[in-house]
Length: 127
Image 1 (tube, one colour):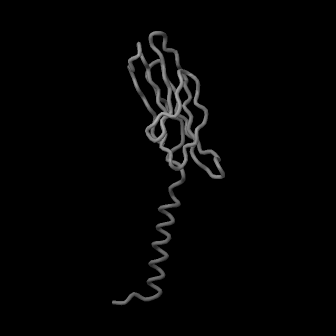
Image 2: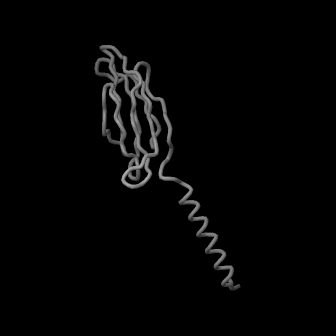
């Protein structure tokens, strides 16, 4: 059975529209928002925002410590992880904004340590 020109055009249009919806419906970011992380006296907020970076809208991420009040021998460590590797860490200061666009899979983490031994580890979502 032969498929007519009109039917082929209709099918091509339908598949093309479906492909555009599938590709265009997913923006350049996975999620935005503020995600609380951290154990006990070492807490932070993983902040993810859509920002204009290098001529396009991309996600940017920040690890913003909200409580780093662990007292010696306890201490806090905050970090940013990108593609499985640590790219930033601090014992209490914020990371500032880091580009989290294409090719990046980032997350913010907060750890609580005691005498050099990690007692607790908590990370936000990977974006």
